[in-house]
Structure formats: C-alpha cells, structure tokens
Length: 329
Image 1: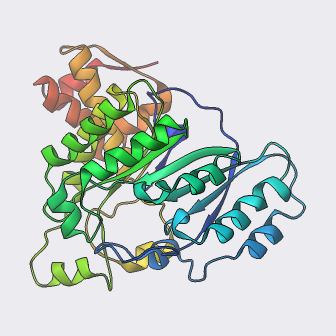
Image 2: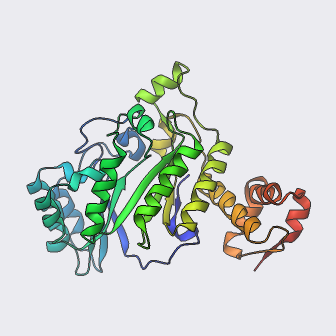
C-alpha cells in the first residue's frame, strides 16, 4: 500500500513535473540484499536500454521528470551512465529533468560526480535502509555508517539534491535504531530539503529473508506494528523537515502475488499517516478539539476509525470522546 506525495501533508510543497519512470531491476547491484527481489516487486524483468528509453521519449510533449529506479544507477560504466543521462537532454522535451536511485558510495569518484553535475538532476535518491551497522550487515548491505555520512557530505558540498530511501522492520532492527538513523540524517541534512521514501519490510517469495522467515529466524511486522512504528517515524521526519514522497511499495499485481509475509495492506501508507497525524494532533493540543482538513478525513474515519482510535490512545480518551473532538474543516 504505497502512499504518494499528494496525500502526505506537512513538509514543503514542491512543484513537480510529471514522472516517467524506468525500472532497472538489480542493474548495477554488486550483491542482492536479503529482502530484495526488484523483478518480483515491480513486475519488470528486463532492464531497458538507453535505446529503449529514447524510443519511449519519442513524441512526448511537455517536460517530464525522467526517473531511473531500481538497481544502483551510478555503478554502471560511466559511458552507459552518460547514455542514459543523454536521453534526458537530447530526446526528452525541453525543461525535462532526471532523477535516479543509487548507493550513497557510488558517487565517490570526482570524475563521475563531474559528469552527473552536467545534467539537470532533480534528485539523487540514496538507498539508506538503516544506519545501524549490525542491521546493515544482516541485510548484506555495505555496513559502515561513517562512510555513508562522508559520501552524503560530499554530495551535499557539491550542491546535489538528495533524497533518502529508508526502511523499518528489517532483521535485527528496532524502533529506536531506525529513529536514531533518521536523527543522524536530520543532523546532516540541516536546513536542506530532502525527500524521503519509507518502506516497511515485506517478505518476498524466493529471497533469503523468506528462507529466514520459513526457518523461524525472522519475524516480520504485523500491519498494526508497521503502522505504529511507521507513524512515529514519519511524525519525526516531518518535524525535522524531511519531505515524505512515498510510504510503502506501490501496489501491483506482481507484488501481491509475491509477498509471503509481512505488513502487506492496500492502505498501509494511509494507516501510517493516520498514526503520524494522531501523534501530532495530540502533542499540539492534548485535550482537543482537533481541526482536520477534509482531504485527510479518511485517515480518521476509514479502516475501522483507525486514526480516531490512535488519537484516543495518545490523548488518554475513549474512542467516542476523541471522535466528538475531531472537526473536519
């Protein structure tokens, strides 16, 4: 249940071009994280070539944000990176920009950063599921947070726009560990505007995590656990000035068919936002009344009145008392 930016509230409004995403599943990855199967998640099996991208751009009118997602974009050979980026400047409509996802350490090379900076980069999304070295190691990720910090500082010093992709519910991860990572990134971010995606960990068929789950060595989050943990995470992220643009993986038939366990729910993003909103409202006005924009009504009235229940829990009221104090405006 992914939740896109238009529903998130909080943070700074950002003018956005219409996205044109290209998925490059596992391309450039040196290994495979224990939880990951990007082909199963996206339903995309083959990696589109620069020629495929050029063909897709043919005949478009109006600028687009060309997005290269999946894999690790800056681990391709520099010539291939250039070919993908040239698609944006040479074949996309004027005013188009490019966004890509990559590992934090992939742009250490000065020459590669110099190449990337020649293009209209709207955002570099860094995969930082956690900053806990034990959890990174358990996930088969590069496990030195200090190097990650140094790499981010280098990108920041070059003025490159940063986004972060983080996760909750990973093997060996707890709530405090995830929030500590968020706080560390917030300190590094300072006043900059960083976009954030948050992905609660799912168990995908055929992954190493699935084998750990089947052996009883990994316990995934329930939907409610993910909603409460994710809600606290997003609440803090908004306080620190992050701009959440998605919560949860985008729901696809392919994803639904491949999930073996974990917090898979078509409205998980909405539940997480309900918890985040309930926390904020109860903190700002512990006894109510609580004005809520009408566009956010479903967070409180939908899914068994989940938002109202959480507001009641945070305010120490009965559900009926809390419901009476919510005012939709």
